[in-house]
Image (tube, rainbow over all chains, first blue to last red; front, side, top):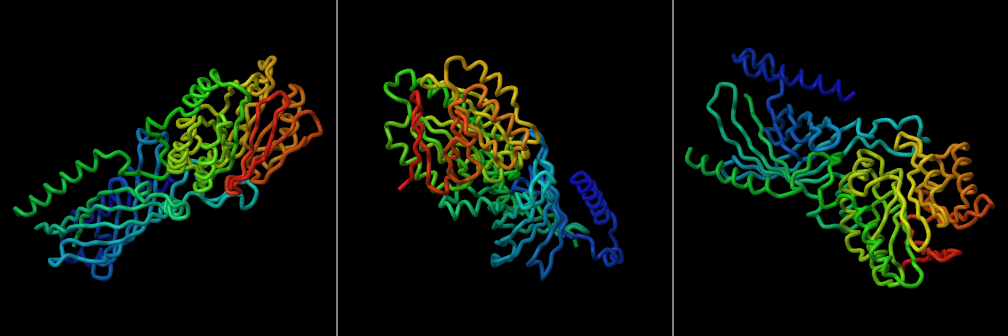
Length: 194
Length: 267
């Protein structure tokens, strides 16, 4: 399952990047309007050691949604971890010049293969466990836009995010743990295309 | 352009500082790599216990809790209570230390247990095997099956999880361990009682017969979340089920010849 998703995702990723890089003239732009315009590379953030994403910017760039694939190599865990995730962000404030933005966001992560399952295996009685392949994360972040004078590339946007996972947050609140125990950081780079 | 360079410089500096911090970046909830300082807890604690036992006088008593899941508030209450009890030598946790088998849950558990001023030993539960939990447990605590000696008794910790571990319990290991007990009377601690949901009728019989054959004095479990104490199979072995941590209850076992078993409630 995850193997298939991995392949499908990398195909779409390569295709989309090649379209943006080489399909330069304006008619092409119109023709491929549905192609993702935001390409992201992220480090950490419970999406993987490294994750890549394709995204759309909506509502005058106030909202971003993207599909991510993340990978944790074996050296950081006993078994490699593949994560597929949907990520959405919403801008809250921006600086006066408009380059720096503060936003909140969430991801829905899916991982199967490390004794985590979408559907309860048959050996268990009905309702023994709920699926443990999904996790929600919530985070807040800041990003700064740097314009690039390039035909297709509008600009680059480094960002830093601070967030946590649903279960951790639940334990933190219900068992009165310290927030510092559950928060973690991630950094990334958005490439924004025209 | 100058200002961009300045900004980037600050950003890079900030990143370098952040990268040097440990545990600031998390790759996935399913990561199974345990940090160095949290490894081999069973080995460390049994060495500690051995030292305590070699100087101990009088009866040895241990307290047992089970199915702590994420009930850290109750766990802290228990630790406070046991810390003030001079008569309790060590603590046993009967499995289901984690709820979803996540590294973070194990880390929080360990962080809370650090407050305990006595050694503790654990046995693996079914929830501990979820996600990458089996691997986390192995790194953090150690072997799934092991035994210790205390006050002339052999206490055997036995992994009897069937489903989540994707394997059968190692009954031949258990039998060998019982065979080599000698004059010491054995006590067995496992997570799932033999009449529990994961045992088939045949497996239940294997376990109960082993207890009978080797005259096991006591077989202690968790998993069911409700308390039980009695001779379940009407033989010499008495069976105890330690309820879940959430119930605020624990058991006290005094390692005398006849074993003194008492259920206590936290205030």
